[in-house]
Amino acid sequence: MTERTRPVSLLRSLGEVTFAVISVALARAGWGGKAIIWASMARPIVRVIGLSMVTPLREWLSPCRLSWQRTRDMFIFGWPISVASICDFGSRRWDNALIGGRFGEGAAGIYNYAYNLADIPATQIGETIGDVLVPSFAEMDSNERRNRALLLSMRMLILIVAPLAMGLAVIAPTLVKTLFDERWQGVGPMLIVLAVLSVVRPIGWIGASYLQVRNKTRAIMVLEITKPISLLGLIYLFQNLDKVAAFAGLPGLAHALSLDHRLELLACGAVGLTFTLNSLGFFWTIKNLDSVSLRAQILPLLPPVVACIPMVLAVLAVRHGMGGMVLPNVLRLALETLVGAIIFLPSALILAPRSSRELINLLKQALLRRRTKVAEEPSSS
Image (cartoon, rainbow, N blue to C red; front, side, top):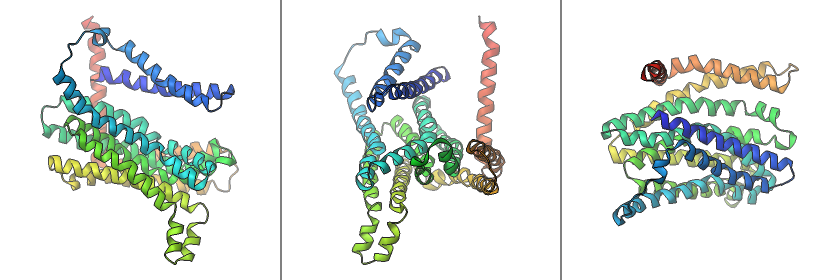
C-alpha cells in the first residue's frame, strides 16, 4: 500500500507546484486571467503523465473484455460519486458569486484569498489521507475492523489538522501583514473565522471514503448535494441579517450589524457552519449504518481541539509582549509560529493523551517498517 500511495502524494504535490509556477510566470508575462486557465490545464496534464510513468504499462494497456453487467455495476456505483464531486466543487466555488454580488469584487477577492489559505490544512492533508483510506478500508476483512480504523483515522487526522488550522487562525493578523500589502489586510479577519473550516472538513473526506467502501455512494451524494444548498442559503441569510433586523423592527441591531464588515465575517461564519453540519451528517449516517454512537465518534475528537487552546493563548501572549518592540513582521511571524509549535506538543500529550500515544505508536511502526525494509534490500538483491 505504501509503495503506491507515496508516488500518488508526490504527483499531487507536483501538480500543485506546476500550477503555482505556470500561473505566476504567465501572469508576470502579461497573460492576465488566462494565466490561471493555462495553469489549471497544465496541472492535470502533469499528473496524468506522471501517473502513467509510475504505473506499469501492463495495467494500462492489457485488454479487458467489456460486459454489460460490469459496465452497469460501474455506472450504478459511479454516478452518485460524480454528482457528489460536482456538488463538492460547487461548495468551494459558488459562494464567491454571493459574496461578490453582495459586497463587491474587492470583498470577493479578499474572501477567496482567505478561503484558500484556511483550506490549506484540510486540502493538503485531509484530502490526501482520504484518498489513501479508500483502498485501506477495502482491504479490511470485517466491518468491525473498518469501524476501528474509521475512528482511529478521525482521531489522528483531527490531531494533525486542528493545530494547523487553529495555529493559522491565531497567526493570521501577523501572516497577512507579512505577506500582503494594505489592499489585502481584510484577509486577516476572514481567515480567523474561516479557519474552523479546516478543523471539521476532513471528517467529510474520511466519512466519504468509508461510505464508498461500504457501497453507500447514494448517501454520499445526498450529503454532498445538501452542502452547497445549505452553504448558499446560510451565506445569503447571514449577509442580509441587517435587512432581516430592519424588517423585524430592530433598526439599532440592523445598524450594528452593518458596521465594520461584520456581515462579511458573518458570511464567512456560514461557511464553517455549513461544513460542521456536513460533518454531523456523516456522523449520523455512520451511526445508522453501523450503530456507532455519536458519542463514540465525536467525543474522542474534542481533546485535540482543546489542546490547541494553550497554543492560541501562548501566541496571543507573545504578540502582546512584542507589541511595543520594533521588529520586522517576518521575525514576529517566525516567533509566533515557533512558540505555537513548542507549546502544542506538551499540550497535546497532556490534554489529548490517547490520540497523542496512538500517533506516536503509528509513527514508530512506520519507522520500524522502513528500517526493516532498508535492512532487507541488500539481502534480497
